[in-house]
Length: 300
Image (cartoon, rainbow, N blue to C red; front, side, top):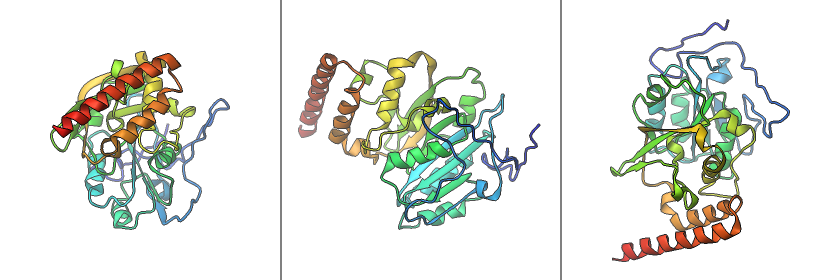
């Protein structure tokens, strides 16, 4: 029986800890390895958090550990609100990991302000968003992972709303996002998934087992998350579940929305890995038609 420790009942990340060091299990068939601490990378500016002080977490049968990963670079404008939206969740078993790309503004100072409520943080150079997300995956102990942008925040009480009654083990549990402009976007697997990303990673809880053999391809700078969503759509859709709930509130500044044509070009390349050439040609024509219509609407 593991003795649990509550450091501070006011925060989701400090209610259910243990001094017993987590055991990292890497199976022979796993393509990637998990770890508790990152080996020092280029230009490291610091690391910290509860793990570095000897506090760890685990999943329980009635309360799975949920890992939230935030990757950030020069995000001081919104990061504090993001952090608060995680640590103020009502769910008791939340692990929070922050991967900073070596920020030059006040980002690290904000992280240090909350490091007694963050499980692990590190600040060092990386090659982009998906390199940082892969680091977060390597470090995650949770049964489910969600990637929360540094300018986004979790909807109030959403983790408890989703996992208080979730009994079955799903590969993916996903919901909706609300943009700060008021735009409501419903995640959905459908025919449109062949054309573009229809599942928003800010609203997607991925089961840890998916990452035993998968990491985001860092050669894609905008939409590498589309690949995992497409794989689930094609091969594991029946083991995913949609919940009609707002999971995250997001800004409109995400790179996949501001660089839409580059994003679609990346998704075409990803799709070609999994779709027969003749169908991929058809989907590319449909996508090109859609983008042309969008451009005409903007002009008028």
